[in-house]
Image (cartoon, rainbow, N blue to C red; front, side, top):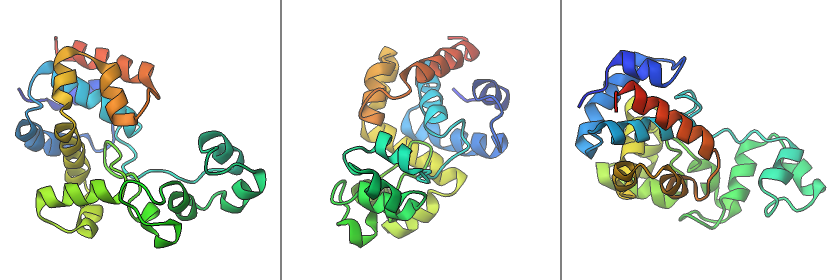
Length: 204
């Protein structure tokens, strides 16, 4: 089943570069068996939420001090520390993503080098390495590829397949799917709204 330009524009209001996204998706979705109304609707819904309507394919880490305290209290336990990192995306990423997901320590620079990219924010050196290995390219090449329409879409498809998300899509279980993608349930209502709207557009 192929997605049409009209359907994509209806599913994601005001989507920029709709033709480019459609070209990439039509090429990639069948390869990852995202090929039924429920699977396509779930995929588009999650991508739309994660990327702010297909607008942001690189994580925005430009936080103010008070936001750092609220969003990352574990990493910024004091106002002084938050002030020192405020509005410095590279420093923030290097601290928040240090020593996990395959990244080195804060001074390695891995946190920012492997910050969230793609339609479903691929994050961390391990994810980049695994994605790169699936395409037989280097993690550095993968980081560059993630900045393209095709790369941003393919990384989301790869993540989808790696986490068996078609299973949740077939069951219509957006909650479980969100937990796999987000690690929690942030934005669950918005994701469900996107999903139900997308299903309606596909006549399912």
